[in-house]
Image (cartoon, rainbow, N blue to C red; front, side, top):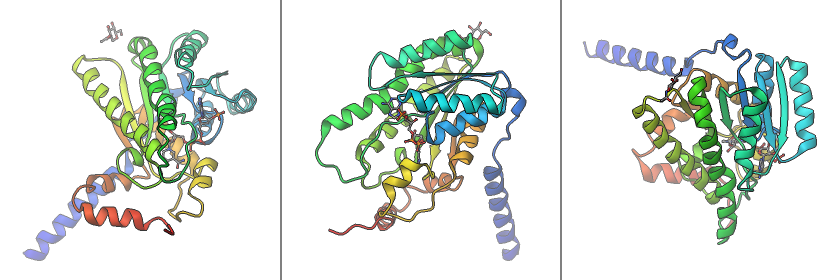
Length: 287
Ligand SMILES: NC(=O)c1ccc[n+]([C@@H]2O[C@H](COP(=O)([O-])OP(=O)(O)OC[C@H]3O[C@@H](n4cnc5c(N)ncnc54)[C@H](OP(=O)(O)O)[C@@H]3O)[C@@H](O)[C@H]2O)c1
Ligand SMILES: *[C@@H]1O[C@H](CO)[C@@H](O)[C@H](O)[C@H]1NC(C)=O
């Protein structure tokens, strides 16, 4: 009898894990002709998001600072099958650029279905050196510009029953050494857009917000940073990008990539001492 109960429990747990792992499936047709603005799309995950969307026949506007690189990404999007592919160079540290970029996209695409907020400014992977100004600047780039773009896009998304997709990080859920400014901006994003999810639901808004929580991804900038510090496995950017598109298109409130970080966050506060010791053990550090 006891063995039977155990078997049932294991079965239920396995079914639960399998269900979570499978996640919702994407209907690629739903993205054909979809009007999408992707930020931070000159390289890394944002670039991969643009390519997937292009392959699905979406209309994309991409943005980042480097015009030449954006031009090359746009050309590749056209080859991959985008119905439309345009770029606009902008610096999200400049307080007037976020609004300018959204207006450009709405104007050129004749509306907007998805706002994919993905860009981040560069930040050192190092112990905090007391520099408050860098964090202030990074807050504008990684956090406040997201709010400015969301604000400008919300009325348009309300009409199209569209979505805001926020690319966040495990470092917005858990604290880890060497990333104080970056982690602050990601915690802020989770706090802000988590609140906005509640408020939009209470107002019966047509707009969905998806918060994507990513673990380490194999983009050049991320690998460059952690090199020599840790050998945690990095997951492929192209797969992360597809995961972001899928969770946005299926209007999930929150999604995790790779999936197992969901469980890490679920059990995060059960054994804090053990958790913090193992986080520090991930990193090589000579005092
Ligand atoms: N890679 C990871 O391990 C990892 C893990 C968890 C979460 N994430 C999240 O995933 C997202 C993408 O990460 P990634 O690794 O792909 O980043 P990335 O390769 O460093 O790309 C960052 C993008 O942002 C743009 N950018 C930088 N500064 C900007 C500014 N001031 N104004 C406008 N655009 C700017 C860059 O283009 P320009 O230089 O041309 O401006 C680039 O297109 C981020 O939100 C990140 O937090 C990544
Ligand atoms: C949702 O969209 C419809 C149009 O389809 C619009 O009439 C309505 O005002 C929108 N809802 C909100 C809360 O704006």
